[in-house]
Image (cartoon, rainbow, N blue to C red; front, side, top):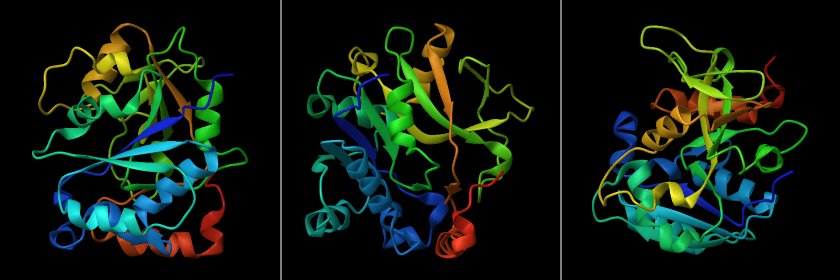
Length: 246
């Protein structure tokens, strides 16, 4: 059993281009589904798991995210912002925030996703499954076929031990990356400044046989376009939507 990471990187700096026109005035993480902004769904999950600090990166409409975080009255985690003057993408944003994240493995979480936990919270399950001796990255993955609001081809195959391999172009794979992971900070230490995706890190870990996955056992929602907002909102508000999809 691994230790619960004390810090989390919450990725909230994206432009939300596919969510326009909503995101012309509202940053995507502040779009509300199920009665609260997606960013609060994430921060509440971190608080429930006992994570002590969340580093939230900002860029697009950063003032609105800062004001929302300043007004947040929910309990921990302690929140620190990492502002980006230019878009650094997910990997560049994490590298930029490394001085705030410390030397221990940390969670990375997209601020524009929503999930419902199964019997054991997903963050707890990830921490329990984390094995730094054999893993560089542990990704939460969810079945492609039951990802609500998602219509892509998936991202990964997973063997019985949890080892991940990327989907080959033109095929459908059984699992999609669910936007939550545990990663080692040293993976970012020697990266040049600037924009890059954390998928670069995942590919390197995969090539080294150190990229693992954990199957999510609750509902997971992809809120990628304006049409998905009422769909996910209705599903979260309907008690029947709280049942785990088989």
